[in-house]
Image (cartoon, rainbow, N blue to C red; front, top):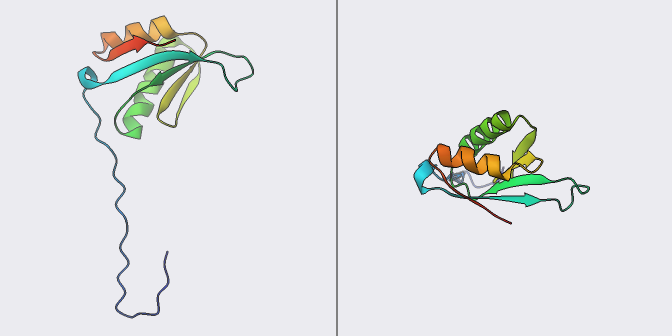
Length: 103
């Protein structure tokens, strides 16, 4: 909030732009494995999603449920516990996403 002594001051709030979610066939997702900073435990990371945070969270929740493991969604990434690359690529391509396996 801004304080001004000017009686004619009009506060302008910046609009937060949230990118529209692309259709699954337009998404290019990369499914990779990562274990840096996780105590040596493997985590499958899904990168490249373009769209709203809510849609990303829904996709993450669906992947966690289908894989039967825990995980989270943060910083525009879906994190799934364990090495689930093959299963996730199969699920995503079945849903119409362009998904490829990373390193």
